Image (cartoon, rainbow, N blue to C red):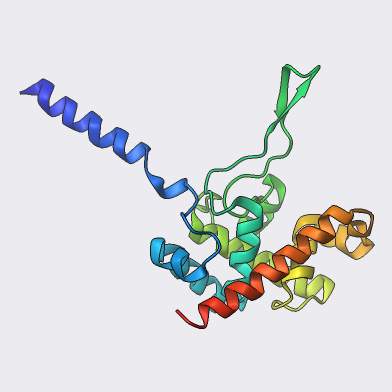
Length: 191
C-alpha cells in the first residue's frame, strides 16, 4: 500500500514539474488563440493595463519578442575558448526578461516583495511599471510599441542617448514589435 501511494505521489509530482505553464503557447501569432489557451495571461495583462494604462497588445508584443511567452527562459551561456562556461550573457529571466538590477528597482518602488519574474502577473506588472517610467523619463506614449521597446531594450539612459541608432538589427526588431502589436490589437478587437 505504501509503495502504491508513493508511486502515485511521485507521478503527480512529476506531472506538475512537467507542466506546460512555462512552455510557449501553441499559436503565438493569434492573440485570440493565445488568450483562449492561457486565459490567466490575458487576466494578468488586463490587470496591468488597468493599473498602468499599458495596452494589452503592447504588452503582448514585447513579451513575444523578449521570451515568446516562455516563463522560465534565460539567456544562453557564454563560453571561453568555445568550451569553458563563463556564465550567462545577462541576468535576464522570465516572461519580461528583466535584469536583476531593474527587477530590484521595481520591487523597491512597488513594495512587491514576493514578485517573481517567472510569474506572468508579476512580469506584466513589471512591464507596466517600467513603461510608465519610460513615459515619464523619455516622453514615449504607452501606445508606441516601437519606441517603448527600444527604451525597454536599451534602458532609459541608453534610449535618451540614442544608443539604438548604432544597432540597425535592433531598429528592425523594434519595427517587428510594432507590427506585431498592431496585429495583436486588431485581433483582440475581434475576440
